[in-house]
Image 1 (spheres, helix red, strand yellow):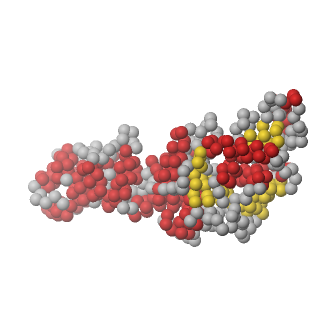
Image 2 (spheres, helix red, strand yellow; image 1 turned 30 degrees about the horizontal axis):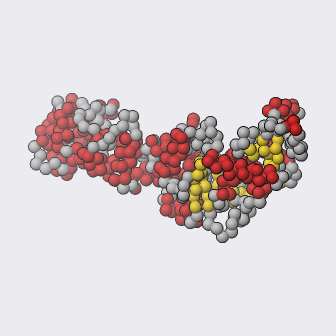
Image 3 (cartoon, rainbow, N blue to C red; image 1 turned 120 degrees about the vertical axis):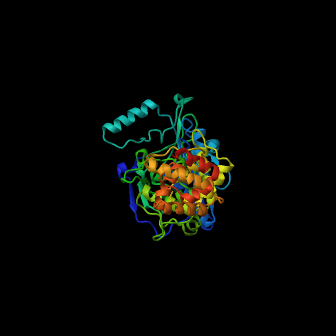
Length: 492
């Protein structure tokens, strides 16, 4: 990427009140175009979300293009991670996925057209010559860029059969202006934009050329992406203008920072979308949370996907970087868990458990227990991981191994209480939460105990934990045989 800012080659002007679209009356066509060199980054997921929301809001089209021209770093696993991440986020795209590398012939065709029209030229400079050029520029304290040595030079017989690259004959004076909905007008001095390579010496197209050609052929009207691509926009505009193609509407999103204000990195926590899935966040939580990272609708914090589609616009995107706030993310996820349908949550917990190593597969009885206990379980959980951990006593059978807090509750006196309760419960004619609670209350009154002194050791024996859903509901869910087995293991 050209480091334009290093040479003061770009300036910002205020954003215009309105910008021309690629076609005045056409519905927007947007695209998400990740490179498959790794996982779907959380920042990329937000970019995809904003493009998807604007397309759905306007009745436009949302396309997916995999920019796999970097053959050494692009992998099938990374492609799968991107597709799986988008599908988990619920960001469905329109039409078939476009793979950039497969369109290399079309990219070369455009380069050859520019060459034929004199808007591009062959450069025979060798690697050694270019190294010498850069060394000289560096020694002179000048910007490092191609010096145009083949721009107005015709190859001679000595160049026959020699490798060459095809370079764009870029404007050397004046300015290139990126009209940006978010950043305002960003002005680049053309004298600092050198003649970039369109085709490498092996005939393969460069990323800059491929992006422009693909956007044109796919009918893309709006290019919404991270502001780390802002410098690229100036270079790509030069190709667009050379071809006489309509310019898209640009919108470059500020990057996401960590809680400390530094650029988001691994030290701040998870970066991959699938990591958030495995940490127990719901897709609707991630859509809501990422929406609020850089976009606002008044003071609204909880925004459903339906509301987001109805409200979303590009003008409400902020220009400042956003900061990840994991506490806010947890609280938001807790809201969506409490608001979710019990069967949906049980399915999500089941999916989470199936991805464990080794996987945990729920049978019909475990599923039924989970469903019956879900109303109480979901009130306490902020993530699906917490939910699965608090539900562990439901999908595994047999006596519990208490955690440290639960073990403290299983005193010798408490174990005697468990022995007596077991006998009472075993003889109970009705096995239901209210009926068993009535038996426990009568026992507590008879022995001068508070109900908590009975319920807490019962909770520790049945769940292995010091907190759980209402314990008499737990008894009902576990059933007579399993509950008595667990009580018996700790009864003195």
